[in-house]
Length: 113
Image (cartoon, rainbow, N blue to C red):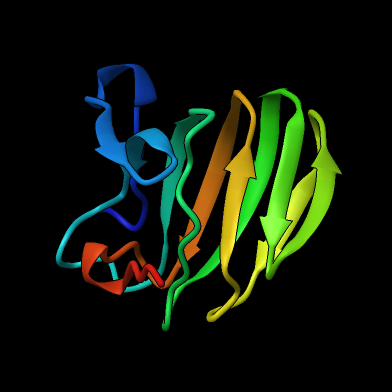
């Protein structure tokens, strides 16, 4: 097995998620480290949190706000947000982001109040 992985986001199907639509790379049983997602945020993103995951968002396109534990923070392209486990969050507005999940994304670790 190679000591690296390569993903082509243009070849990954988008799936529905609480934030809009996500293309998820490096999702495999033999990867315990991290996953990377390109997410197209919809205006109706749902507030959620993770008990185990840390997420790092990088805004690529669009502008709007991040709701982070009830605080509204304006964001624009090249804004990065480090979201710790337990932080209730959502993106507000239409934007495209890179989301790095550490450890790898686990749909069982999405929680809603």
